[in-house]
Length: 114
Image (cartoon, rainbow, N blue to C red; front, side, top):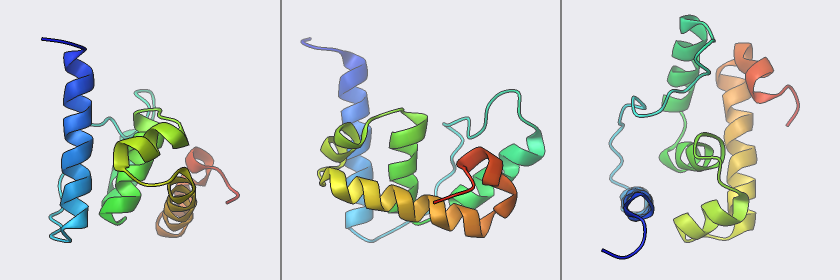
């Protein structure tokens, strides 16, 4: 086998997720694969964040997961999703703004200003 199996699996997951929200047949899934808050944070904070993320659109959630949980740059996330870096940047901004509205108690975690 050539290359890294982890890279293959990541690319496969990204491609499937992009195809999933492009088809517009959105089925909400659990964020259980991701630890949505730092291990030292309170369970209440984790549940609040998970609930707020679940209320975002699939596109917004995907961009935030790639940018902040997978720690990809805008360019890397854009390449993984097959969209421009500018689109990633604007979708990230919109998703964070929506999180601030959905869960103002998370302002310390996501930043107080847009």
